[in-house]
Image (tube, rainbow, N blue to C red):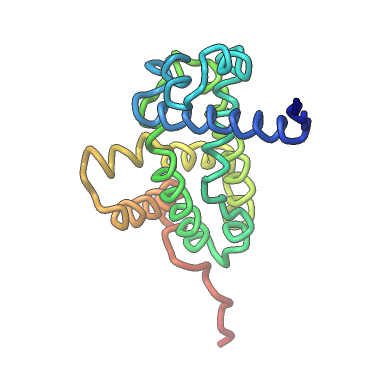
Length: 208
């Protein structure tokens, strides 16, 4: 009589694959109908596992949301921080930043469009953290190219770069994304005052 061999490594691999399948199913459902309308039973059915399995991996909503947002973020295009900070002037920096945010907003739109932060504290905290990180980057950027109230201007830029404004322009007003990018660049520079709307800083004065 043969006995089935027990391989701990294989079992761990299967568990990891099953957990990943549950996480991916959660992300798909959240994009399709939003986190609030997604139940653990929905996830179990989509992932092809039992309901207790889903609960064993993610016993709380925070654990489930953490895994889901991590899974989604892993596929997102990175924000080119070095390229933004290395831009030769403010307009070039704004153009690089706007293009990157446009790409990020388009990627995250299936999940952000549900706007369920008020119902799910985890999402509210996550978006607040992202806003803080972006604002910190904006302060750093503006301190390199612009003399003024960096904190106030960074807050204005953060609002102009928000997903909500991007989506209103692209979806509700049906503006082409290229037009939206150009518009946002002009708005960012205008928020700093008329002198910042130039494409590059003034060159050295010629001697007479």
